[in-house]
Image (tube, rainbow, N blue to C red; front, top):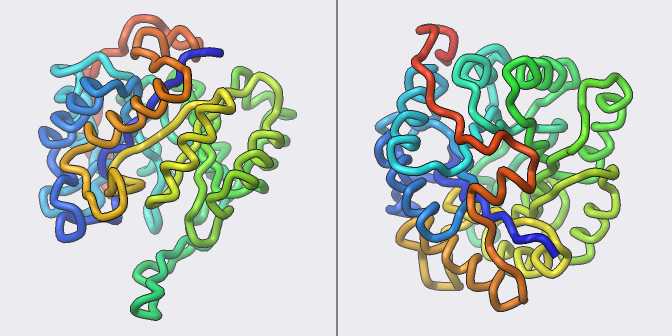
Length: 298
């Protein structure tokens, strides 16, 4: 069985420090978390940009600074997000076109995206995450031209099915890289049974990782390890090492994922080994100087 690739999702866009003090905002803080995650065993870091106050940031300059700060500290694989609500598609993809990270998230379908509190009997977040095919096609064509590996984020089985026309058109070519996101309200539940179904639905020549939301993360991580898949952990998805014990950094979550990998009989892949497994260029991609100014503003 291949070595398990661990991804750390460092910050996301929704959670703030009043919920988890360890969430990084600034490029330097994000890079320091990337360094901690890599030291704990992460081969890939998945990154959203944040403003100094904690809001989402789509400025090209911010992503460029994050890339440079990360590369100054570690050779981990950099995966930038393109997921957003209410941001024009051109702004969501500009940093991928200009900065050319090794990987970028490609959201594969639209959905109701919500966070509901049973205690409060209320929704904390309630919005439509829109990803029509025309946007997916724009993002995919941009990634292909920039030689960036699309990491297809699927929140439900229908999102996996959305790859079929893109494969038929020749826009998606193997090997395919999937992230199976489970446990988001509006998407597929986070259970072992549903994960097995998701994996069985993938096209041939697919790599995959599971992304569990909240404490559902840990049983899904264990299941994915035993199934030969890869895993994503990190503060974007889950704050807790275990119930009642909040992580002090992304490194805490990566460290636990690594222990599970070893306990279940596999080894953790280094960034070098992950590049080889995934068919990426073995040389870490450097952070280029920004070639634009306003293209990534939002």
